[in-house]
Amino acid sequence: MKTLPTTMRAAVYHKPGDISIEERPLPQVHAGDVLLRVRYCGVCGTDLHLVMDGWGRPESIPGHEYSGIIVAVGDGVDDWHIGQAVVAQPTSSCGQCKYCLVGRPSLCLDNTDIGMDGYQGAFAEYKSVAAKDLLLVPEGLGLREAALCEPLAVALHGITRSEVTPDMRVLVSGAGPIGLLILAVLQYQGLDDIVVCEPLERRRKRALQVGASTAVSPRDLAIPEHPMRQVKHPYDVVYECSGKAGAIELALGNLARGGKIVLMGTGLDAPKLDAIRVILSEISVTGAYNYDENGFETAMQLLAKRALPVEYLIEPNDVPLEGLLEHMQALVAGELAGKVMIEATAV
Image 1 (cartoon, rainbow, N blue to C red):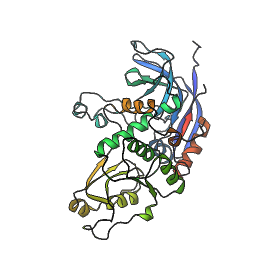
Image 2 (cartoon, one colour):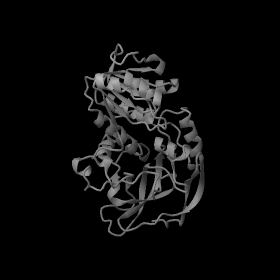
Image 3 (cartoon, helix red, strand yellow):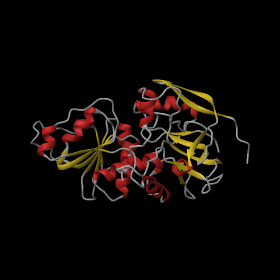
Image 4 (tube, rainbow, N blue to C red):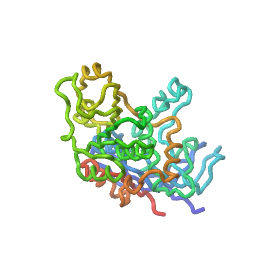
């Protein structure tokens, strides 16, 4: 084995819109941990909030959608060895609180928020990870595709929360990376009436490539003037992935009686909730945060089966650490649709 370096290159957040590539000490490997050489790390909407909107902690390293190779193992780690390709779940559940005991680890009372507290992320050449949070990348699946595991698990949790069935009419609001992943999974599951609402033409085109029945602009949808009225062709389920207040209000107005809206986008502006419409149509409003109990395993199985059109879900050009901020800006501007992969280290 090659001798490990003492330092690594990492993208460090300082203030809103300001990150720099710096030399940082190699992470320590404590008992129960492994050290990964990070290969790929996807840019998440949460990363955009942390870096561009200033949610992050100064001097922290963002990034949590990653894959890598084990290069060192800590004391007490017997089930993993150097050279294995893995992904890691960025948040751990305690397994003992009332939410974990009923199979809802996303609500665990002991979860650490990504980007907060002491979390140090994977926009770096190396990352220390608790061995218990690792998942092996199946043979034949590339590390680039495997880095989709975390956002795919997020999409799967939203679908679980929706309780969708194949006979339902579905609207996906927002054709960014999570919206496209939801669309891809629903299409794989056999739903054939999936409409995507997206203001940007380039993203509408990408949605059609992924499998949308139709891709429309928000101006093509209408909200009835009276809460007792419905649109002509309402939707049974809406996945709201943009986080935009206007998009949430528009989506709510396009739900059928007894419909459900799953809120997945994290915007900064609160929408106005049409409570009368919710009451009269018995609409369900729910959030979807993080993952199902076995979400990572299910996501990895889908990726290993080549069940999804990954060529449309990941942007074609990988990006070095130095290009991270530029591509974050492009994502905020809506210039990109798929997942941006940061190549933290070369092969």
